[in-house]
Image 1: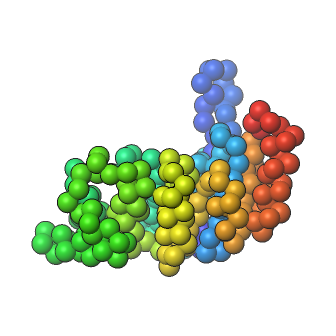
Image 2 (image 1 turned 180 degrees about the vertical axis):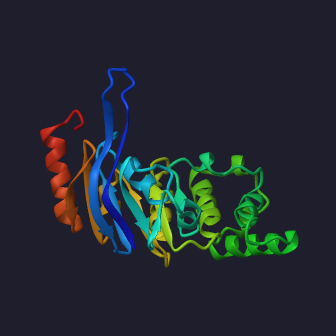
Length: 237
């Protein structure tokens, strides 16, 4: 279970006037559903909210726990439970070849190189990506890169996947493919998106606006709320 207890994030204002800039106002919520979407305008605080879940961002007020583990004091334990998928797969694909990148994810848990190679190939096969194993990550399509990045994340066996706008750079075919792949996983998935059809597939949707959770509920009501916000404030917040 993911629990936010008055968790907020502020940073020094770059204007240097001594005031802090609030990225996320104190939020208290429990995330228990299998599929949770987070929607909102660019700069609304969605990414900050997601990054709090695995310790990529640290709360400046309150705390966040994952299965009872504090994301600040026990960040290593949290990251063994939470995988993170970025919108741009090239930001997390660091090895030249596909199988090497999956192997890198397994390095901490499988010390033997031959066993690690076999495990990586097995994970790629499970995702239907065996044909890409020897390919350079730079020769892949955007959809293939995102699926390889997802395979590398899932290979470590975390029970929770956080995905920050994972379909943003994908064409329609690969967008649908990635969505279907995510929704076929056993893991709990918490994801942000601007694709309202993608959000509508979730069990629960949170709307974030100007650093605050302004709506939290079933998809239709949340999306309707977000549409009203966009109409009322067409320039952003």
